Every structure is written in C-alpha cells, then in structure tokens.
Image (cartoon, rainbow, N blue to C red):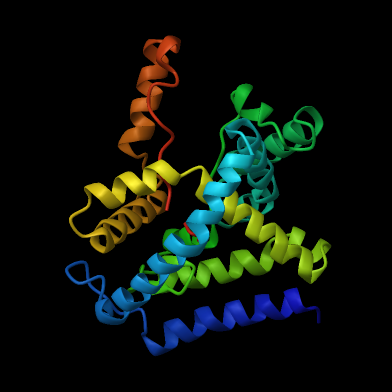
Length: 261
C-alpha cells in the first residue's frame, strides 16, 4: 500500500472516528464549543501569517505580476478538477460532472496545459465541490467549529472531508513526496499574494477578526453545501446580464477553504 493510499485509509478512519466519538457535537446556537483553544490557535496562525506567510506573499507579489499569478491560479484550479469531478459524481450531479470533463479537456488542449482558463471564456462553468460538501449533501452535520494550526478554520465534517480530498488528489500520486510539498507551498503563497489587500481590509474593518472569520467560513460552507450563491456571485451574474462594460467592477470574492485553502 502506497503512502497516499494509507493516507486515504487514515482519512476514512478519521471520519468514522469523528462520527463514533461525537467530537463534532455542536448546535446552531453554539457552533464553537472549543472557542478557548480555537482562539489560542488562531493567535498562533495570525502570528505565523503576519511574520512569515504575508512577507513571503508580498515578495511573491513584487516579483510576479498579477497576470502570472492568475496563470498559476488557473493551473492549480485544473489540478484540483479530478477531486471536483469525483465529488460531483458522489453527489449525483451528472451534468456538472460532464462539465468538469469538458473543462479539463478544453483547458488542457487550448489553455496551454491549464495555465489559461479558456473554458470559462467559452462559458463552461467552474464547479467547486469537495468531500466536505459531499458529506453535507448526505446529511452529515457540520459539527464543531475548529481552528487548525497553520491550516485555519474548519469543522469536524470539513476536516474529515479535507483529509479525504488531500489523500485522493491525483498529482499527489504522480509526483515524488518532496515535489508535493513544493507545489503546496507555491499554491499557498500564490493564493495569499492575491488576497493581500482583502485580508488587510478585513482585519482593519473587523471589531473581532476571529468572529469575522468564523462567521464568514461557516456561512460560506453552508451556502456551498446547499448550492446557494453568495450575494457577490448573484451581483456578478446580474451585472453581466445588464452590461458587459461593468464586468470587472467588483473585486473577486474572498473564499476562505483554507483547504486551507
């Protein structure tokens, strides 16, 4: 059994363990029963971001123009499509799964190996599914809100889903172990560099940044499970229908997965 398959077995065992122990017990009125330890981990994560990740992201942003960062982002979106396809199938979304296949083929053939998202230009939707959403669609409750060192916010359900998604990512089986670490670091730094101003603004505007992140994460994940669109996405669609001149008026929405990311 390869290390990736062992990781998948561990992920499934983690999910079973969470269900068996009831660790994910929480209520809508109190989704954060471990707030004390979560806040301490949050403080650690904030320190790591301010003193390590953000400075590296600033340097990355200085060296690489936004256009190049977007090419990296498009490529990483493509590498994640097999996981999206798998979860579309697990949720019984056959039409979405077909669009996933069309997207991968289009971007591989006409997007220079995935560095250009030509599928979106052609009107092919970009689906966003993961095993946490799949579990939610199966009726598994979100469980308790958790703050994970370096990884950020999650819940017991999303943590199990993240483990399964990580273990089932195809490129993890194709690249040597050291290469996967490098790819992960590049992905995190590139993602963080594209959100420098958004994160700064949210920190400035939030009375309690911990509460802001918790609320944003839980609402975002619930909308994804229920296949609801955020107000920003709805505004984007309405604006696009009214006038193509205003296509880039709003900034891209901030998504917190810190699947970590």
